[in-house]
Picture 1 (cartoon, rainbow, N blue to C red):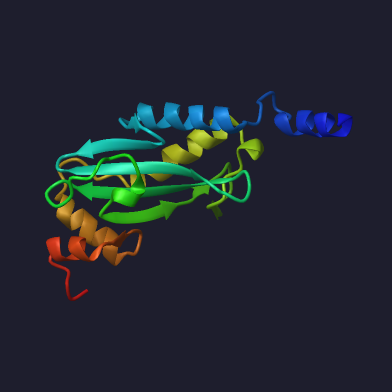
Picture 2 (tube, rainbow, N blue to C red):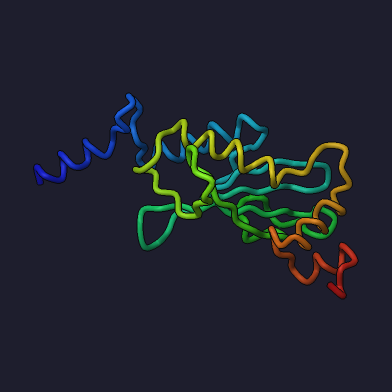
Length: 167
């Protein structure tokens, strides 16, 4: 038991004065980051309205280990009146990785005990704007572009709504 306590103490310190996160600190860092860019917490997810579209981001914890990944989705209010509380209710879905620190490599398995709060927030601030619909942009065109570039995947109903039945 003492060896575990020593190992845990070593892994909690990054060596630069910052502390690696536990699960609670990870979820608090996500909330801090997402609320700072206009998302509201809805159950375990975060939602942001962009006109008639709601963007959902959900940190998902693995059932098999202590890592997370990030799923996102778009709810198109003209065709979908489901709650904005999970990516399972969205019309288009995808996931995104994070580039941690100076690495260009995208990581899809995010281990809280291997990150500091500032590393997570910096990585999220780089990744999230890529999935946001820019202001004064035609949302349908943005979503069609996202589908064609395969950054998210639509339901059949969504393809019909966007006029992409043949794609």
